[in-house]
Image (tube, rainbow, N blue to C red; front, side):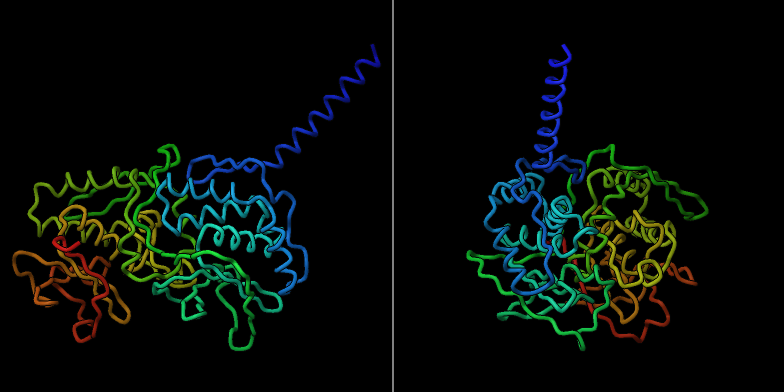
Length: 400
């Protein structure tokens, strides 16, 4: 009896060990409220453990390339297509996958190499550059990106994806970097920072946020649904061109919790009064603070991020105000970029102040940033009246 018990116990132990081993061969993690499971991880236990060098990186790539990696790539691309993920959000999925394969805090070079490998095998044009102790990961993109290192290779622009991992501070004047060349066949596509839609995330993952302000001697309070995960998705999103920042929409849940409320409030108002209401909402429902104070660097928030954060600057409010006016009134608008300020001007059917004429059309400044003096529609900040500006982005319903 004792002997039989020992045999059963031994079998149980082996079964448990085998179960644990099988679990190690699988990847299972959450991404935007969905559980993603990748069976039979071909990279199980494969880590980059050598001194940083061209030869050791080639050796590690050969090991990765020899593995049966295609099922993982297919799984990631299927998820991208099923969820309608734009490139930036797909890259966040790749980051999450690389974290499972080789945690960033345990082996940074291995983690970075996995990101590069997965992105490259997904069909994107990505490169690596190294110094004696740093590994930089670039992706080919034709878009204008600010305050991020870029390099030109073969007449193509490559933008750095992991500069933040070095605290946005590398002395490129005195530190030499080498290209790591790999022979990877196949057509490679450019990476775009444009985010045309935010994925649908479970309502349970949203939290309630209350915001309010006073307008015309009346207090207005709103309860909206926001998702803190959006902050994580865009934590390292660079200062992209205004055409990217202003085009990022609200997620479905946040949209449905706010836009109908605002529409109900402005419905009995004239268009001018309704826009004035939205302008004051954007000015006073949030505290003002500069990016350098909040983030330590320039960061352009989308409309959804501006709703998420308690503090924001002029660029962020301009993005939110622009989005609200577009969704509720769909009026022609231009974004005015001054040297130290960003504002919005709107085309109305009647004159309100001094117009800004652009391409033969009159637009009127509606500044969504709080000022010492409460500016009305059509009023420009006194210190900006003689300043030059650039029309950085436009919305024309007839064309767009």
